[in-house]
Length: 194
Image (cartoon, rainbow, N blue to C red; front, side):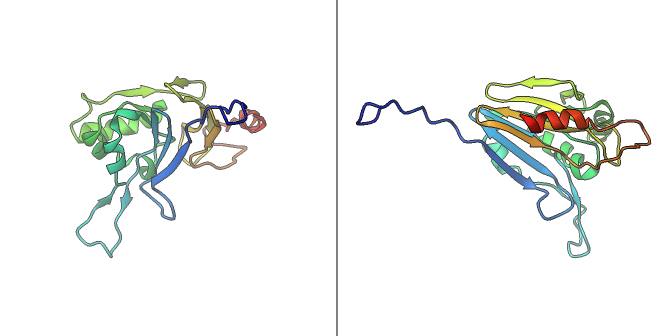
C-alpha cells in the first residue's frame, strides 16, 4: 500500500536468461532460464580445442553457478544431438545428476555417451516430442518441431508468469527435408501471435 492508499501490485520475480557457453563461439552450448524456484538448463555441449590449447581434448561449460543452485534445477532439455549440444552431458551428469529430456533420436546419442562413461544406469533420460508439456513450480515448457541437419530437433517455449520465452535451438527453414521431418511453421506462427 502506498502513502496515498493505492494498492501496488506485488513485485514479481525477474526472468533470468543467460548462457554458460555458446556465445560468440561454435561449441559448448549451454543456456539457463531461471524464474522463482525453477531453473532449467538447455543443452550441454562440448567444444574441441584448437592448436592453441595443446594437451586439451575437450572444453565444456563452467557449471559452478549450477552447482551452487542445484536445489532449483528441474532438468536439462536438449534441443538436438550435435556434439556442440550434447558433448558435455556425461561430464555434467557426474557433477549434477538431473533428469535429461530429449527426443528419441537425441536420447539414443546421449545414451551412447553415458554408457561409454559408465553412468547410464544412474542417469534419468526422459523422452519428449513436439507435443510434450512439462510443468514445474513456476515454469511450463512446451515444444515445437524445427528442421536442422540432424533428425529429431525441437524448439522450446518457456511459459513464465512474466511472459513466454522461446528458444529455437539450431534450425533452418527446409521445405523439402530428406527425412520428412518438417518444421512446424504453423505452431511457430501461433506462438508468435501469443
